[in-house]
Image (cartoon, one colour):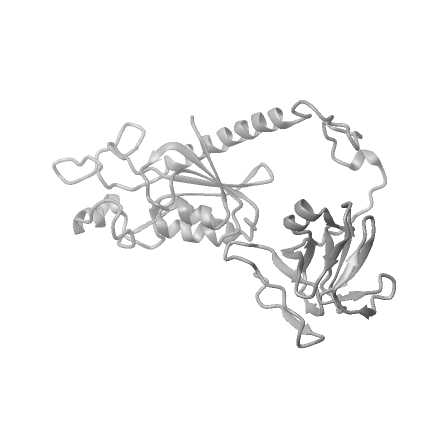
Length: 343
């Protein structure tokens, strides 16, 4: 769920609520208001206050926040203070927990050679809000119960300073292998499509089929596979919705209405492959949060909007698939990673 509004209390009317400096900024700039005692966190004086070289002082913002569970606010340095004045946060990044109801403070340390004066209203840090996961820590009786890795017990510095490290190339190779595997399943699933638009017909109006039963001239074969933790959790292909007339028996509705390709896509008996896969996961009670979706064509605008709100983390598309349906910009705007693969 989105974080929504956060209630903020100013201990003094002159204090400033953190705010973003631009429309594209994700950090909320924190404004200095007074000095706090580093041990008691009590107010010990107003501003300005000077921090000498090597010194650190706790600067209070004058605001208290009620951050909802399970979110946090990370207190991070501002690049301008660091690059120009050598001022840093001693506990960077600091964390403001959901249950904290004290005044937010910034522990500024002077790493430079000149004294630095903190003035009232100066932007001294920034807050980044993010959702956190609260896992259950389960004790095991043996180290052998822990999954093994190529790195093993290598700790600090074990991957070295130079070179590519232990796993970049191997990770990419395995990822490509996995993508190919699932995309081949997508193409096999797409073979179940029963869309008849553009298919060849006999003189009696019946659609022509191959010896294996496939529709001759069929071009709209779309498949979708949703994978999570390296296993397939749902699949789908384009076909008529349950209970509708069968297009191979009554003909293509879009052909009958003379609708050009890509237009008025709502006027169709078909459920798209992506929609069928998402519905299949929902019916099975399977979460697709953080999953990867594989498709052999770019999603249409309708499917793209549904994917954007589904929790899918990555979309893998078959390169050279069915034309540009303008759905990718919606996918990317939603923060979903997009990869292409060739077979």
